[in-house]
Length: 225
Ligand code: NI
Ligand code: MN
Image 1: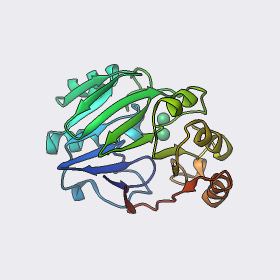
Image 2: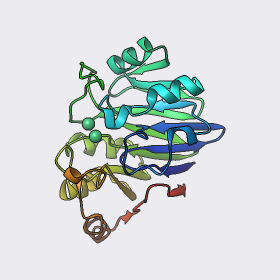
Image 3: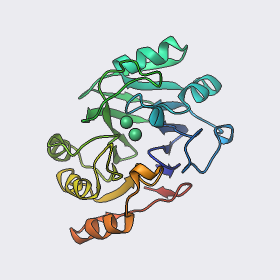
């Protein structure tokens, strides 16, 4: 499985024959390394919630590639009304897709469509494929549920927001990495905008000081896991 970071919370996953985007915020994302027209393949889009910096270019990609949109019920219905193929999930539920298993986890945040309408609950995402499990926290505060997520899943790579203001900041994200028992921590959702500026080196030092590996990905960076 290959992970490519496209800035903010936008993660591209390549696994087997499939290309999956989590929160494909490309247009209007000052941290993004690509243009939406550069995307060559997109089979599935996983959305953590409906905010514009996560829903992003879902409409463009789903229309162009016929990608299936995976989201909590209300957000999936919204995408379906736009004419996209969708798969409705909800918190605590998982499903085996051709590329791997996706399970949604609780996240403590809010969610609305880009137009500001109700979009159900926000979620975190577990993706298991090729013997590895990754966790994308979406936008969330630190929450005790992360202990359960860590106890019930062997998370190899955890992507955690560290930008503060709208989500966890550095110290809460360090605590989250302990709760999640994850080996490798990838900071996301920081430095995209002034409001979420964060010292990623400080985060890295704190994560490494508790015996975990911090992988700082610059937009465009990829890792094979
Ligand atoms: Ni949000
Ligand atoms: Mn956000």
